[in-house]
Image 1 (cartoon, rainbow, N blue to C red):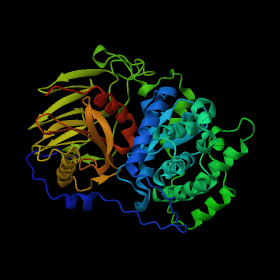
Image 2: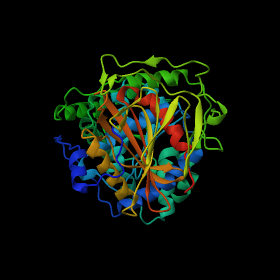
Image 3: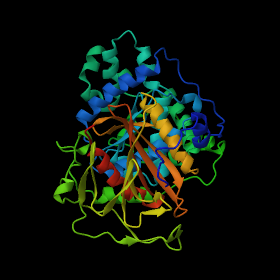
Image 4: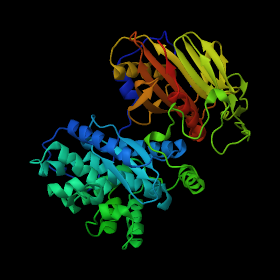
Length: 489
């Protein structure tokens, strides 16, 4: 990826949208009509935030950034596949993995989605796992949660929140529901809503490149395991009848070109879970200092769990020519970190990355992960940090302008998802994932952009870049870097 030129002019936002837009052209045979809902989408977000806070107080989240990142990537892809008429700009779909072997998943109003590790372990392929997530976010997109609340609107909003929590934890965890006389009402969605989520979920899967038949296969597998101690997912999601048949029939009406069934990333996730011996933790799996649990401080020479003293093998790109000659070997990120104190920020990066200064930007990259061609730095592995002169007080608008500047030097840059909220330097920020083709290697690469506003009104950005087939490995380093970034402007 070419370095951003901080002095380049920022063009009109229209060209950005034309360049990065990814249209969805699939048309489904069955039309889904959402239920009447007197509430505004903002109410979904409000109720979902309250319920999510309660969920994370009661449930342990899985302490593994690799699994978390993988599920987030699948979830983002599916959310992008939601048909335009069911997209709500107020919603911010998020995905977290619960450290529970129960086969279950659920999504709260506004997009707060949780996937049990048991579901990942039970799925036969990525398509089945994606089918469960697609079903859950369909409930969100159709606003089924607040539609049910509306039917009981004579009760207070607080009661509605408890009702949503009841559908997550079940009757024993929501004793107030019984006292209110509405406990059973909120414990699960109606069969009508279930069928709507099945149908819309099949459309989302097809739009995202998956085969809806995998969703049907997952339901069939779970039903075969049902009984007195069957999967929790089935008890919360009643079968509308002939579920396997009508999902398969719906799939026949959708355009499917070489759909995704399984991926190497899914197989790796299952392998990690099989070998996982870490303790269960809540609240994102961080210790009091903010570092990932079971990991020493970077500047004290700590290592990631299970890596020990093992040295990473070098990797070579066969038959690739860079602009300055044959591309060099690139070592994977070191498990040890070192700190760099800059004028207004402090950053920890793998100790085998170099600091490269050019103009107002600083790039941290491993040897062989960058080239300098006639004064223009391009990097294929690592992170770039810099600021952009503020022309707006809106973080979203300023980030749009940053992306426009990036696209001028990287014409193959495309959005891979929408904006998501992120903490950057202990401040509210945004993150977005993009796809690009490296001008150095000609290989696909993944670009992750993090932004936040500085006190002087400038935009602070951190851009992580890695080849697509190495991204999962490098993303672990990106997560540690962004979690421990400190701003002192």
